[in-house]
Structures are given as structure tokens and as C-alpha cells.
Amino acid sequence: VATAAAVSESSCESMASSLESIKADLEAIKGALGISEFEMQAQLEAIKAIKKSHPNNLAVKHFDFEYFKTLSPSQKKALLKIVNSGVENADSGMGCYAMNPGDYDDFLPFFEAVIKDYHKIQGHVKHIT
Image (cartoon, rainbow, N blue to C red; front, side, top):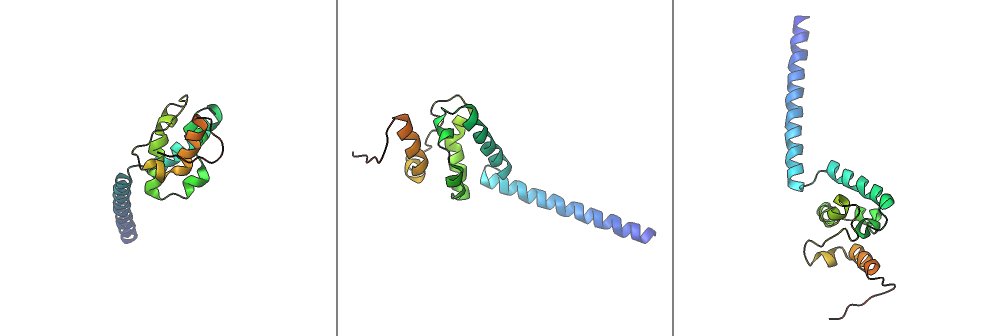
């Protein structure tokens, strides 16, 4: 009986050590991503709620969850940064900011919808400079 208890205690210690190692690995992954899946999910839930509570927030209004699902993890992170102002300030009229000029091309479906709504433009638009 004493031997079984010692083996069981040893197994528990080994399992606890393994869990601590897994936890450390997960923290490293979260740090590398910059935003955890849990934080991302919380932000997506906030966007869903703001769509209902503040329908004039253009960033949230035009945030397309199906489009979001097609993005890579790094693109998802970038798009959530772009709309963060609208999530943090639900009463914002615009609610989004490109982090760099390339965002307009990288997230064209999103930005095109927001900009067209802001400027009250319908149909196809061709920008000429």
C-alpha cells in the first residue's frame, strides 16, 4: 500500500511538472502572437454586442465575421488592432484607423465598406490620382 501511494504521488508530481511546462509554452506562444485567442474571442464578442448597441459605429457595422475567418492569424491580429478604437469607444462614429498605408489594400473589403458608408457612396468606385 505504501509503495502504491509513493508511485501515485510521484505520478502526480510528474503530471504537475508537465502541466507547468505546457503552461510556460502557452504563455510564450501568447507573447509571440501579441494577442491570445481568448482576448481575440473577447474582442469579437464585444464587436457583436456593439453592432446591436451602436449601429452607427462604422468599423463595427462593417466588421464581417465571415471575412475575418478567412484571414491568417497575423491578419486577424492586425484587423482587430484597426477596429480597436471602435471597440474601446463604442459611441465612435468611425471607430477604425489604418495602422499603415498598406492596410487599405490588405483589408480592402473592410475599408472599402467603411469609406463608402462614411462618404455616402454607392456602387463601384475607382479612385484616380
